[in-house]
Image (cartoon, rainbow, N blue to C red; front, side):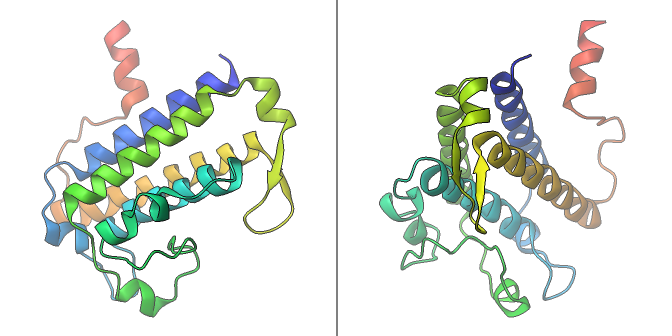
Length: 189
């Protein structure tokens, strides 16, 4: 499997897992924080979408973020738009004060950023992914493949947190949920 295809499948799988973890949650469940300075499910979903918008639009393409250009900051009640409003490095007070945006808007922004990720990766091949260098958000230079590795790590980490927060609130719901990869393998045999 080519690197490009691996990234595309991973992005789709992770976003699918995120949507599965959000299925049926109320606004209160999305806003639940075990402690005031802990991230909520809504915060984590917003943060993933924001970071991906920032990485694709600003770091990789050098264009304006959807957050600003398409007025997503206002739509998600975070205006006026600040391109650096990603949740990265938020203080405990900022996490505590985060208001979960309307669910439908949050999911639409998440879907929009996912589509931009997939659109960008579809224009790459393995050679470009390994040979094109961009400015890293924290300084230095990174290859495009390194930026995508970070994105996948980010999704993996935060989807685990989302699933854990859901489990704290709802307990074990589906003990046979063993992950999309294993479900795919079961369907082939």
